[in-house]
Length: 109
Image 1 (cartoon, rainbow, N blue to C red):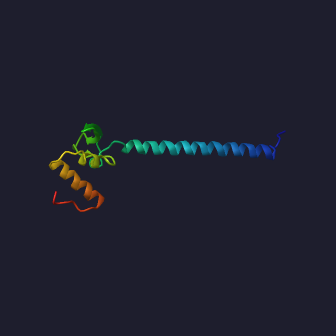
Image 2: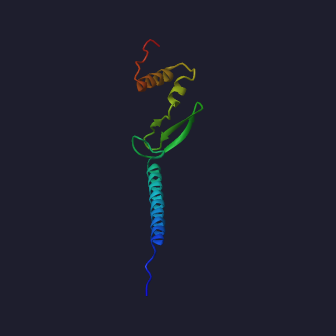
Image 3: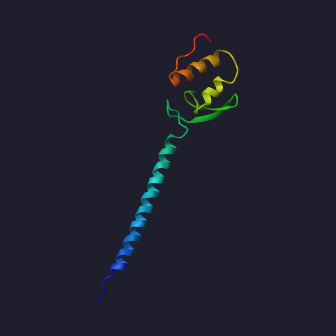
């Protein structure tokens, strides 16, 4: 003789199962986001190889281990261009920064 579960029992187990499924979906989503982040983190935008962090005039720059490309985080190019040192390097960085911002480079400098 089998007893049919009461409505309260069915609701309880349905709620438990829904919460368990929700927790599993959230964990799977977090795992997926983390895996995607790891696949792109510290990778060269040009060739996809690993980037290493190097110090240059007190600024941390990212350099590719394969193509030797140099990549700046937000504000680092401006810091390097405005470090008070005159010369061609500062002029080049100033032109690059202005170009990125959409401003016309000062050719009289």
